[in-house]
Length: 562
Image 1 (tube, rainbow, N blue to C red):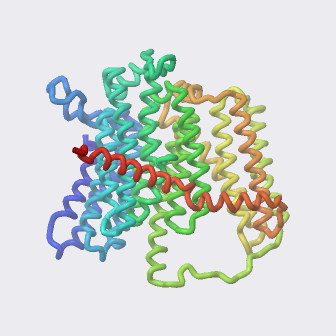
Image 2: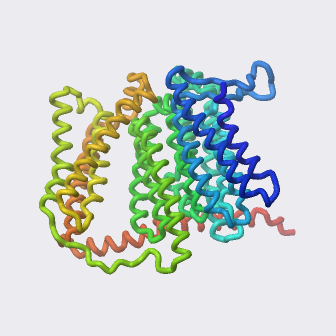
Image 3: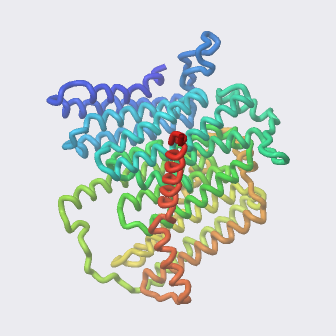
């Protein structure tokens, strides 16, 4: 029963920071880190308990005993919740400890540190909510707390970014609430197990227009997915994240503890519901793919360190939602955890860089050294083998020797393809190494390939079995997300060709080899660069829409002429 205390430990941090005099502020802020650290230790113990003894269910209130509320209040901690609690409390502990020194001279430091504890409390309650309505209430609180965490509201850019964040999240939250209302109307419950069971048995159909019908579960999941899109910065709701980067660096790092990942968590929490709608999964796949491509492309055109990291996060969140749309729910959670740990660390380090750049005008130092332009046949051949030949051999061995029916299982192909794409991306970064013997680069490529393959196989086997121990359930998700075979094969082929051509192009350019391109392609590349540097002008479009709405509102607000 000690698990009931975990979400409330960060609240103790908030109280310790907020109470007391300014003379003891430094000691209180340092001492207040211990409750968050205790929450992290407790989350690890809870994860072990849930993994060995099963889910933990705690009820504070049951509607059978009272009539004021129609949904119970309590916690339900299963393996997914426990994993998220470890991530949130672990990242939150590091961020709070970092913030103590980072915000030391800020006059509003106590308010900011108290908000960190409050955000962690809300996040822990959200991932352990017992039903959909409780999850939504804490989801709502996160939207308000993000506005407050922007911190310096006297700065025009910070205030504008916080307001845009609050406004766009309201749009997603309205859709989320509409999905909850519709789910309760169709199934009569918001309790997760009962909701999943009734949705599986229901054949409800909603008529949108004459002759246009949609299944009830598809309507519910599409509305809930829109809520997840806004929190996880999916296109076209992505613009709030770059504008929010005016917030203190620890706040942007805290986003990766569970706020920006909330869309992936929501789909996994409601996986049995989303698994009933192929349409919603296909929509998630399209939205995630589009966000991943646009986010990564806009990242390459940015010249600001935090905006570069911000658009990288947008691309990675699209990658996560795309994995959900393919039915690879466990892979999406694995990606969520890995990205949360990595990107939170990178944002904290960017804070160090920004701090040093403000102290030293010439940081980062310009390097005048000429890059080595030698071409290494050993490095090139090793890269070719590790990115093409070895994955092909693994594919043939898996299909021929182990007798795994790859052509009958899109899920297996998806996992193998993600292994190949991820290892190729990692190896591509090694082709740009300079002034090192080529055999060292080749060895690093092989080690990278083995590491990526091992980690993905772990995600496929151990992590999938941990989160979804029923193989039939996993197979049903892949079946629901399955694309038409011709379209799936075409996508795999196009992605393969683009990866190989990109590998060859980048490698040759990095080693001083010229690649002939028609003049019109170069002109097109410049136009696209300007387009993505300006973030597809989506911000300007939203501003125009906002001004048009305000003008219309002012006209309607005017009293009628007499």
